[in-house]
Length: 297
Ligand code: AMP
Image (cartoon, rainbow, N blue to C red; front, top):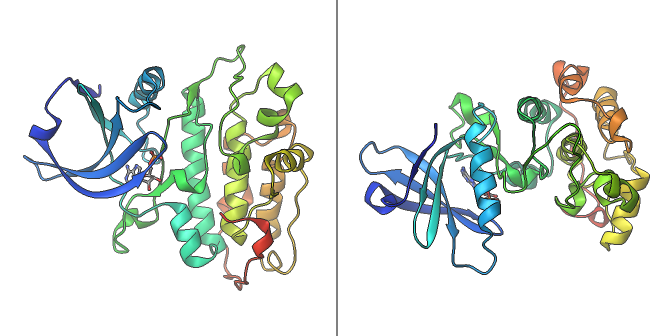
């Protein structure tokens, strides 16, 4: 059970460096004064105009249930008068987005490890009835920044702010997520009136795998209206020369994840059983410059 206190954050913790900023919160390193253990602390300003009590409550309720090596763990909550502090695993290796930008894109083996970790997390979350709904490289964190650590290549899913517990017979209807990663059934006006299910996470992960392998987005347009049109049409390709050195099994996995009809999309366990995620890729492929016009990651 995650501990929950009304006071005492500053008595027990001291702040370290700032790790990042989200829409509603700031994230910093926090050192536990007695044990010296470092955590990440998400600081939510309850007096800010954008603060939504119900969203915070549901993020906490949901995160309390999540205990998995590939998901950030919530260790405690200090719900004080003007601020709420969420004590989380410290994932010091930065985001998958940082590493894509550093390297232009990933070798297939590195992308495979990220895919395996995140798909394992998605399989676990869906088994709990949780849909993440905002998977993207910015929300995938490397557990460690130490190349000698076994956790250097371990990825943890972060930011459960848009996550939702889904009920089989009650489809989700909230339009949410990040435009470039959102599934067709979320942005198609007809589909959204019917509602959608946790398959949206597989679509987003298909986009993440595509971006990791080539460094640019499969769907890109200058306006959201055009972007959503392309997404709903499932209109993407593997342009040469950027995809020439990438295995057929990786392309096949992406094709089976980026299926417009959510019922025909692979499930998390089918993705994990796919040869692209299972097999070792022997030959690292040559990196090329990515085209500018396809959007940044
Ligand atoms: P969020 O508000 O959860 O989107 O977090 C904003 C940013 O803070 C992320 O993109 C990360 O760069 C960083 N961050 C969030 N949580 C952690 C964590 N547990 N460990 C390290 N960095 C984090």
